[in-house]
Image 1 (cartoon, rainbow, N blue to C red):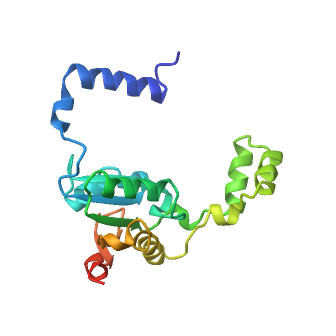
Image 2 (image 1 turned 30 degrees about the horizontal axis):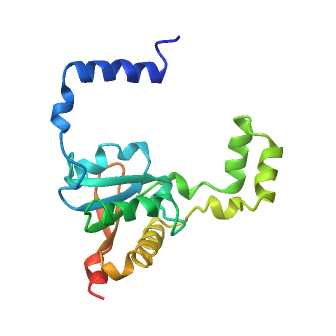
Image 3 (image 1 turned 180 degrees about the horizontal axis):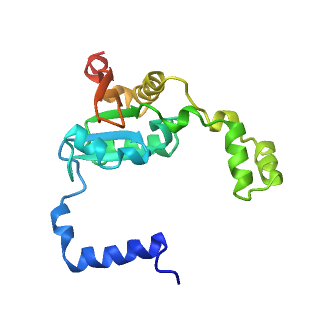
Length: 194
Protein backbone atom coordinates (compact mmCIF):
# COMPACT_ATOMS: atom_id res chain seq x y z
CA UNK A 1 0.00 0.00 0.00
CA UNK A 2 1.15 3.48 -0.87
CA UNK A 3 1.43 5.38 2.42
CA UNK A 4 1.37 8.74 0.61
CA UNK A 5 -2.28 8.33 -0.41
CA UNK A 6 -4.81 10.57 1.35
CA UNK A 7 -6.60 7.77 3.22
CA UNK A 8 -3.40 6.51 4.82
CA UNK A 9 -2.29 10.03 5.73
CA UNK A 10 -5.66 10.59 7.40
CA UNK A 11 -5.45 7.33 9.34
CA UNK A 12 -1.90 8.13 10.46
CA UNK A 13 -2.95 11.60 11.60
CA UNK A 14 -5.92 10.09 13.41
CA UNK A 15 -3.71 7.68 15.34
CA UNK A 16 -1.61 10.62 16.61
CA UNK A 17 -4.73 12.70 17.36
CA UNK A 18 -6.22 9.94 19.53
CA UNK A 19 -2.92 8.91 21.17
CA UNK A 20 -2.21 12.52 22.17
CA UNK A 21 -5.81 12.89 23.43
CA UNK A 22 -6.30 16.03 21.31
CA UNK A 23 -10.01 15.17 21.10
CA UNK A 24 -10.44 16.57 24.60
CA UNK A 25 -10.44 20.10 23.15
CA UNK A 26 -13.54 19.20 21.12
CA UNK A 27 -15.75 17.68 23.81
CA UNK A 28 -19.36 18.85 23.57
CA UNK A 29 -22.80 17.30 23.30
CA UNK A 30 -25.02 16.87 20.25
CA UNK A 31 -27.14 19.98 20.90
CA UNK A 32 -25.91 23.28 19.39
CA UNK A 33 -25.08 25.84 22.10
CA UNK A 34 -26.22 28.74 19.89
CA UNK A 35 -29.28 26.71 18.84
CA UNK A 36 -28.74 27.27 15.14
CA UNK A 37 -28.22 25.29 11.99
CA UNK A 38 -26.09 26.67 9.16
CA UNK A 39 -26.46 25.56 5.55
CA UNK A 40 -23.44 26.52 3.51
CA UNK A 41 -21.50 25.45 0.45
CA UNK A 42 -18.96 22.65 0.38
CA UNK A 43 -16.33 24.98 -1.14
CA UNK A 44 -12.87 24.27 0.25
CA UNK A 45 -12.24 27.97 0.84
CA UNK A 46 -14.93 27.95 3.53
CA UNK A 47 -13.35 25.19 5.64
CA UNK A 48 -12.54 26.90 8.95
CA UNK A 49 -12.98 30.39 7.38
CA UNK A 50 -16.78 30.33 7.70
CA UNK A 51 -16.73 29.38 11.37
CA UNK A 52 -14.06 31.92 12.25
CA UNK A 53 -15.77 34.70 10.27
CA UNK A 54 -19.03 33.96 12.11
CA UNK A 55 -17.50 33.49 15.56
CA UNK A 56 -18.65 29.87 15.63
CA UNK A 57 -16.64 27.30 17.55
CA UNK A 58 -16.99 23.62 18.44
CA UNK A 59 -20.49 22.85 19.67
CA UNK A 60 -22.10 26.15 18.68
CA UNK A 61 -24.04 25.11 15.56
CA UNK A 62 -25.09 22.29 13.28
CA UNK A 63 -23.38 22.82 9.93
CA UNK A 64 -24.71 21.28 6.73
CA UNK A 65 -22.72 21.56 3.53
CA UNK A 66 -24.04 21.08 0.03
CA UNK A 67 -23.07 22.29 -3.43
CA UNK A 68 -24.06 25.94 -3.65
CA UNK A 69 -25.80 25.92 -0.25
CA UNK A 70 -28.91 25.08 -2.24
CA UNK A 71 -32.12 23.38 -1.17
CA UNK A 72 -33.57 21.94 -4.37
CA UNK A 73 -36.14 19.54 -3.04
CA UNK A 74 -38.33 20.12 0.02
CA UNK A 75 -38.01 16.45 0.95
CA UNK A 76 -34.39 15.90 -0.10
CA UNK A 77 -31.46 15.17 2.19
CA UNK A 78 -30.52 18.81 2.82
CA UNK A 79 -34.00 19.70 4.05
CA UNK A 80 -34.12 16.42 5.99
CA UNK A 81 -30.97 17.46 7.88
CA UNK A 82 -32.34 20.95 8.59
CA UNK A 83 -35.59 19.52 9.96
CA UNK A 84 -33.72 17.02 12.17
CA UNK A 85 -31.53 19.84 13.51
CA UNK A 86 -34.63 21.87 14.39
CA UNK A 87 -37.09 19.28 15.64
CA UNK A 88 -34.70 16.78 17.22
CA UNK A 89 -31.56 18.71 18.11
CA UNK A 90 -33.05 21.97 19.42
CA UNK A 91 -31.91 24.43 16.74
CA UNK A 92 -34.08 27.55 16.77
CA UNK A 93 -32.65 29.45 13.79
CA UNK A 94 -31.41 28.62 10.30
CA UNK A 95 -28.71 30.49 8.40
CA UNK A 96 -28.24 29.90 4.68
CA UNK A 97 -24.76 31.11 3.71
CA UNK A 98 -23.89 31.27 0.03
CA UNK A 99 -20.64 32.71 -1.28
CA UNK A 100 -19.21 34.74 -4.12
CA UNK A 101 -17.41 32.89 -6.94
CA UNK A 102 -19.37 29.69 -6.30
CA UNK A 103 -18.69 26.74 -8.59
CA UNK A 104 -22.43 26.07 -8.90
CA UNK A 105 -22.67 29.18 -11.04
CA UNK A 106 -20.84 27.37 -13.84
CA UNK A 107 -22.20 23.84 -13.43
CA UNK A 108 -24.62 22.73 -16.09
CA UNK A 109 -25.63 19.56 -17.87
CA UNK A 110 -23.13 19.87 -20.73
CA UNK A 111 -20.12 20.54 -18.51
CA UNK A 112 -21.15 17.87 -15.99
CA UNK A 113 -21.68 15.22 -18.69
CA UNK A 114 -18.30 16.08 -20.21
CA UNK A 115 -16.61 15.63 -16.81
CA UNK A 116 -18.42 12.30 -16.22
CA UNK A 117 -17.30 11.02 -19.61
CA UNK A 118 -13.70 11.99 -18.78
CA UNK A 119 -13.98 9.95 -15.55
CA UNK A 120 -15.15 6.86 -17.43
CA UNK A 121 -18.94 7.08 -17.06
CA UNK A 122 -20.38 5.75 -20.28
CA UNK A 123 -22.81 7.60 -22.54
CA UNK A 124 -25.04 4.54 -22.21
CA UNK A 125 -25.31 5.05 -18.45
CA UNK A 126 -26.02 8.77 -18.87
CA UNK A 127 -28.76 8.10 -21.45
CA UNK A 128 -30.22 5.33 -19.27
CA UNK A 129 -30.56 7.74 -16.35
CA UNK A 130 -32.16 10.39 -18.56
CA UNK A 131 -34.65 7.82 -19.89
CA UNK A 132 -35.38 6.75 -16.30
CA UNK A 133 -36.70 10.23 -15.55
CA UNK A 134 -33.60 12.04 -14.28
CA UNK A 135 -33.65 15.48 -15.89
CA UNK A 136 -30.02 16.56 -15.64
CA UNK A 137 -30.92 20.20 -16.40
CA UNK A 138 -33.15 20.29 -13.31
CA UNK A 139 -30.96 18.04 -11.15
CA UNK A 140 -27.86 20.17 -11.85
CA UNK A 141 -29.66 23.48 -11.41
CA UNK A 142 -27.06 26.21 -11.36
CA UNK A 143 -27.59 29.87 -10.64
CA UNK A 144 -26.52 33.21 -12.08
CA UNK A 145 -26.83 35.30 -8.95
CA UNK A 146 -25.73 34.12 -5.49
CA UNK A 147 -28.14 36.51 -3.76
CA UNK A 148 -31.12 35.06 -5.65
CA UNK A 149 -29.90 31.54 -4.92
CA UNK A 150 -29.73 32.28 -1.18
CA UNK A 151 -33.23 33.82 -1.30
CA UNK A 152 -34.53 30.71 -3.13
CA UNK A 153 -33.10 28.36 -0.50
CA UNK A 154 -34.45 30.52 2.32
CA UNK A 155 -37.89 30.44 0.69
CA UNK A 156 -37.91 26.63 0.41
CA UNK A 157 -36.96 26.33 4.09
CA UNK A 158 -39.32 29.01 5.43
CA UNK A 159 -42.29 27.62 3.52
CA UNK A 160 -41.69 23.95 4.29
CA UNK A 161 -44.87 22.36 5.66
CA UNK A 162 -42.95 20.86 8.60
CA UNK A 163 -41.48 24.24 9.50
CA UNK A 164 -43.73 27.12 8.41
CA UNK A 165 -46.01 27.02 11.47
CA UNK A 166 -43.06 26.90 13.89
CA UNK A 167 -42.03 30.44 12.87
CA UNK A 168 -38.33 29.60 12.97
CA UNK A 169 -36.20 32.52 11.73
CA UNK A 170 -34.40 31.63 8.49
CA UNK A 171 -31.67 34.07 7.54
CA UNK A 172 -29.79 34.43 4.26
CA UNK A 173 -26.20 35.60 4.01
CA UNK A 174 -23.41 35.73 1.45
CA UNK A 175 -19.76 35.39 2.46
CA UNK A 176 -16.71 36.54 0.56
CA UNK A 177 -14.43 33.47 0.41
CA UNK A 178 -11.35 35.71 0.27
CA UNK A 179 -12.01 37.96 3.27
CA UNK A 180 -14.79 36.25 5.25
CA UNK A 181 -16.97 39.39 5.05
CA UNK A 182 -20.66 38.57 5.47
CA UNK A 183 -23.54 40.36 3.73
CA UNK A 184 -27.08 40.07 5.04
CA UNK A 185 -29.51 39.09 2.27
CA UNK A 186 -32.56 37.96 4.27
CA UNK A 187 -33.28 38.92 7.87
CA UNK A 188 -35.24 35.95 9.18
CA UNK A 189 -36.43 37.85 12.23
CA UNK A 190 -38.64 39.92 9.95
CA UNK A 191 -40.17 36.76 8.44
CA UNK A 192 -40.69 35.00 11.78
CA UNK A 193 -43.05 37.75 12.95
CA UNK A 194 -45.50 36.99 10.12
